[in-house]
Image (cartoon, rainbow, N blue to C red; front, top):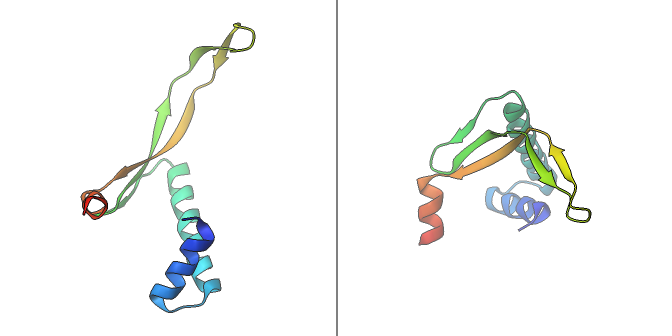
Length: 91
């Protein structure tokens, strides 16, 4: 399912317009992104938790030349599924 299909599904399930459903999806994505950017977690009980993981700097290798390169440290968004979501998928 892509974003437009999700918007269509939400609009049909809640009986609202696709434009309103699109604004809801955009607001959700924006809220989660800004919260993670501020270093906080987003926990939706029964669904899952969005967090930020830290990856330390490391030495890599250029596959074409074999030369060592430095890979900078990075922050990565992460999602851990909750029990409700796991149970729904496994039914």
